[in-house]
Image (tube, rainbow, N blue to C red; front, side, top):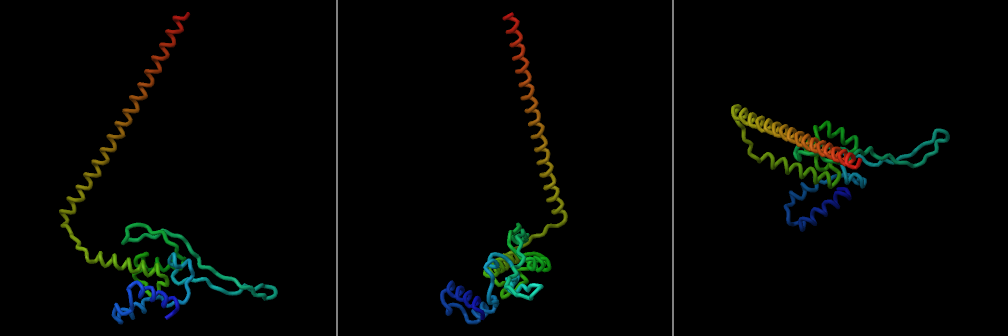
Length: 207
């Protein structure tokens, strides 16, 4: 077991209370589920990097073959991925390799379900995977009702009637608003005409 796995195992034991509170078979299963990688970069703890890490090497000059140390950072992008179980988009930082893995799996939910715990590499990935599995298990226990075709047709007709009523209401509201604006414009014109007549009569009286 790597150093990271041991530290994560200690956290689990600390939250549970003690090592003797759970059966040995369950604790062995927890050990097998922990990631086996030695080091994970700090940025990877805030996203899905799919095992990508900073690579170190040398930059060799063309003339003298001089070597200078350098590093290659993973290509990290911030994307909005749609989750079907949450029914919304999730903004997360992912590497391009993780994006290809997600596309190959068929979505973020399928990627988290198919990837084993020891390949998640970070605590955030393990927590997401556990949450997704719990939500899918709760969804599987729900009872689903089916309607015959006649009932479905009636329900669809009812939705169509509601949509048509909403359209008619919006149309009538727009017409009433247009009439109100016309009346206000007519009132303004009449007040302007009366003001001009008063001015003309006043000038005539002065003359």
